[in-house]
Amino acid sequence: MTNIDPIPARLAFLKAASTIELKQQWRDLFETAPPPFNRRYLESRLAYRIQELAYGGLKPETLRRLEQLGEDLDGGNRKKSRIRTDLMPIAGTRLIREWQGTEQVVTVTQDGFEWQGRPYRSISALARAITGTRWNGWVFFGLKNHRSRA
Image (tube, rainbow, N blue to C red):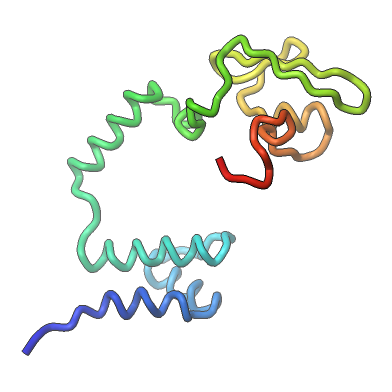
């Protein structure tokens, strides 16, 4: 008699489950309230958790190695690790954007950005300071087309 692995069936169920069912599974598997993210996020995290509980997660030494590699790459700065360095303009670059008839000049620094003598870590926070409304800073300054994914 062969043992049938129930995990593939549980994973397939996620695609057919209602959002209410997904949120209940989240409560059961994570023992916390589900986050307010979209369905795709819930499905992927639940799929990972189901497999992690059934087959085991990453080994502690693997987790330590990944943490070490991350620290080596970004000097331990968790915020900086989220910014892809190949997308970040070179320090010293000037970003120029006209906003409501006024030219706005932003300088890229080693730690982020500078506008009107004030430092900003986030280009989106800077765009918000200029406009008074929420903007994706990369789109605002024309560094990323809002219709395509980088």
